[in-house]
Structures are given as structure tokens and as C-alpha cells.
Length: 325
Image (cartoon, rainbow, N blue to C red):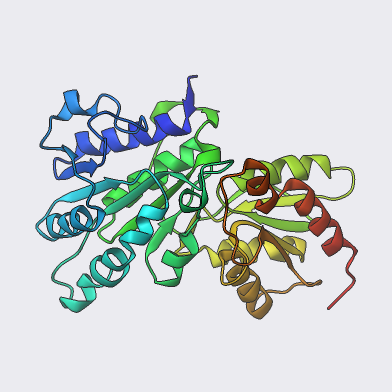
């Protein structure tokens, strides 16, 4: 069977949807040149009417996509750098995500905001290194964060078909991940459906995005000490609280591994909900970036802010040793 890379999965999902539905088109900066390889071959395949090069006017072309969606098209906007989503935060959260309600259900806005390299790291500088998925979840915008090529394919397909705006984060550290797959088995994945990557009985590790792969490595390293279940939410809004509850019911203990800032991040929300609604036999822990982390251009300082496998292993051991609240 062929190997499918994360980047190829995005390319294939977008191409499959453009083949399936003529209302789907892609727009963004440098999409004609396929700078990120997401739109490789698309200009020749679909032409400039469906592969739309735009100027450096993020707020302008994001609002253009909202109008196109309200008129019956399904735009996919490719953003190359995470901070660009902050420039258009108002357009997404306060405009596109609210038009269905404000129009009394008459106007849906099926736009996909595709970020194929979320969380630039190791020297790319402060303004290219954020992971703002928690902000969109907080505002009630459908937001996905797949860790594997098959999940990237399935969730991008679902995002494009969804009648609401969906923000898609493809972590930079996952772009080189490959899976052996049968292309015929690739299929849409429902939003809000988590995935158990490794079954366990002693502690649940909720890992988000590229940290799934590091969590799996830690689970293997600790295999002689504990049975670690690695659970991936795949989408952060809607969140699969039922799936998490089922995992915690098996293990009774919880650690969250999250590459966003500690304060008001997804790690905090997951721990709070688990503490309120699930049966835990020990206090949960989270491993995240520090509060208010601002990544600089010095690679060593950048790395120092990242949640690490060593921190995760320590958190797992601490939770396992705890005998109660």
C-alpha cells in the first residue's frame, strides 16, 4: 500500500472536494505557485477562476470569502502563517460565524480557513509561532487539529462540506508524518469525534495536534511502569467530551499535553470539565507552554518554551503516584 504524507493528504482532500463539487474553490497568497505544496498542480488542473491568487489584504479577501459563501460557493482560504488568523479574527468570529444566526437561518457561511503550518517553531520568531486554536474554540467556531495524514484528509473533507465556518490547523511538526494507507479507505471524519491512538488502563494522556506523536513515544518509554492511553480529540470545537469520559472511566487519571499557552488554553478547559463531570481518582495535570509565552527568534529560547516529552513523563508519574485529591 502507498505511503501518504500529511501534506499530500491535504492536497488530495482539497483536490477531491474540488472535483466533487464545483462550488469549492481555493484562494490565498501564493496559491498559484503552491508555495506550501497544498495546491500543487491545481492552477493547471482547475484554472485561475478556482485557484485565486490574492494580494496582501487578509481582511479583504477573508470578507470576500464570506460573501462568496453566502452566495453559494464553498471557499477554502489558505493562510501560510498562524498570526494571519489574528488579523482576521473579527471577520471569522464576529461576522462569518454569526451570519447564520443573524439571518434567521437564511444564510450559511461554508468557509474553510486552512492553516497548513500552525505553530512555526525553532527560530521563526514571535509573530509566526502562536497556536491560537483555543481562541477560536472559545468563540464557538468549529476548529480542528488533526495529527495524522488520514485524520487530516478526513477532517479537511468534512470541513469543506460543513455549512458553517471551520478553522483547520495543520501543525508544522506533523507535516512530515507518513502513514501506509489504502486510498480507497480515505473518508470524511465527523467533527467532534476523538480517537484512541494507544489503549491503556492506568492514565489517559490527552494529546493535541503534533504532540500525539510525542505522547505515543512517552507511552512506549513508560510501558514497564504504566499502561498509558493516548487519546486525541482531533477537533477542539466541537469537543468529544463523551469519548474523553469513556477513556477516563477506563483509567481514572488524566494528563493533558497541549502546545498552547497555559492560561485559558485548551489544557485548562479539558482539566476543568473533567474535574467537574468525570470520575477522577487523582488530581489531573497539564503540560503546556508557560503563561503568556512569546517565542523569540533564538532557537534555544524557542525550544525552552515548548512542552516536552520529559515534562509529560514527569506529569504521568506524578499522577500515577497520587492516591487522592
